[in-house]
Amino acid sequence: MSKVVSLANYAQRRLSSMFPSFFANGNTKHDHYKDFGYPENLSFMQVYRMYCRNGVAAAGVNKTIGKTWQDNPFLLEEERDGSQGGEDDETTLEREIRQRFDDLRLWARLAEADRMSMVGAYAGIILRFADSKRFDQPVDHVGGGLDGLVEIIPAWEGQLQVSQWDTDETSETYGQPKMFQFNESAVDTTIKQPRNLVIHPDRVIIWSKDGTVHGSSALEPGYNSLVDMEKVRGAGGEGFWKNAKSAPVLEVDKDAKIDMMARAMGVAVEDLADKMNEQVAEYNAGFDQLLMIMGMQAKQLNVTLPSPEHFYAIALQDFGASMNMPVKILVGMQTGERASQEDASEWAQTNMSRRANQTVPNIMSLVNRLERVGILPEKDWHLDWTDLTEASIVEKIDRANKMADVNTKLKDSGEWGFTPEEIRGAAGYEPLKDADKYRDDVEDDETAAAVGTKPPTKKE
Image 1 (cartoon, rainbow, N blue to C red):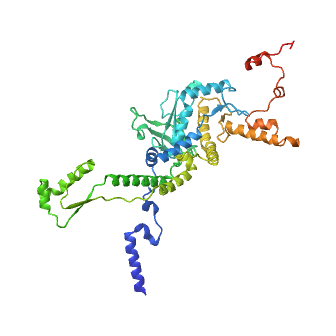
Image 2: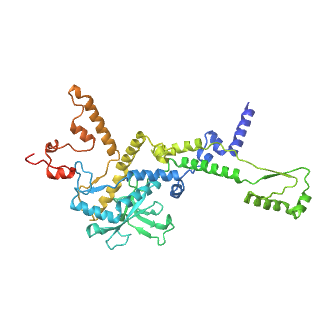
Image 3: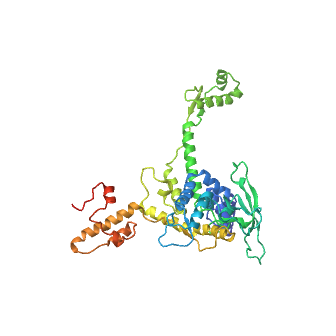
C-alpha cells in the first residue's frame, strides 16, 4: 500500500514540475493570469496604450467624460434657489470669473484632466501663477486678482511623478508628496519643446477619485476583457487573411524526379527549394501568375474559424459592466436600434453620481487653492451644474399634455386631476401670476400689430 502511495506522490511531483500552475502545492486551481495571458500587475503605460489603441477602451473613457461634462458649470458666490447659473442673473464678480475662466479655457482643461485620471491612477493640474517664482518654490500670495492665474496645464500620471515624500512624522503633510517631477515628453513624444520641471505641491492639484496619487485606473477592472476582445478581433482578422493569401502546400509525388524538375527550372538540385520559394512568392503576389510544379500537387491550408461574435460579446458585456455603462451606449447599435429609456436614465444617474463624488470635489479643491493664494476672494462658493437626469423639453411637454388629458377625462365629474400650476410645473415653467392668468378681451395696439389685426375703435 505504501508503495502505491509513493508512486502516486512521485507522479504528482513529476506533473507539478511539468504543469506548475496547475499542480503547485497540491492546489488544482488555475492561475488564470498565466493561463490566459493577462498581466498580473498593470502599469500606467499598459492602460495608456490600451486607451490609445483600443476603440472600446477609448469609448468607455471618452463617453463617460462627454456625459459628465455635457455642459460647463457656473461658479456662484452663493447658492440661489432655482438658479441654473447663466448670464442673466450673475453678479459682477461671477461675470468676471466666467470671462477669465473662458480666456484660460479652464473648464476644458479640467475636463481633460478628468479624462486623464480615468486612464491613469490620477492626473495632475499644474497651476502657473504670475508670482515671479520658480515652479519648485512654495506659493504665498499671488497679486493681480484673477489675472494672477496664467495657465492651467493638465498632466498624465506618467508625466507627473512624486519625486520626494514628506517623511517627517511631526509635519502636517506627513505621508504626502513633498515635490513632483514633471516630464512632458514621458508620454507625449510629439512635443517639440517639452517641459521638464521640479514642481512644488502648492502649484499642483491632484485629480483622482480621492484626491491622492493612490488611486486606480478606471480601465483596470475590465482590462482582461479588453485583452480578450483584442485576441478575438486579431485572431479573426489574421485567420481571414491567411485563408485569402496563404501560401500553397506542395505535396511531392513519390515518383517525382527532382533532378529533372531542377533542370527544367534551370537551377541545381540543391537550389531547387529556394527557386520554389521564389516561384510561390511570385504566385502569391498576383492571381494571374503561373506555378510550375512538375510531379507535385498544390493544396491550400485553410484555417477554420468559429463565429467570433459570441466570444467578443461576452468580453464586451463584461467591460461595459466594469464601467457601469450599458453596452448600447458604449458601442451603439449598427441596426439603428437606440438605447432604451431605462438605459439612458441609468447612465445619466451613474454620471450624476460620478460628478457629485469625484468631479465636483476635485473642482472645489482647485477653488480652495485659488482662494488660499488670493486669486479668488474667500466666500461660500457654490458650483451650479445642470442636472443630467432632468427631462428634455419634449418629455416635459409630453408629460404636461398627458396631465391635461386626465383633466379632460375628469371634466364630467367636476373634479380636477391636476391644477394648472402643476401642469405648468411639469412643463418646466413657473406658475403664472394673477395678472397673467387670463387673456384680455380687447387687444392693445402693439399686440394687434403683432398678430396682424386692427384694434377696435371707440365707435365700434
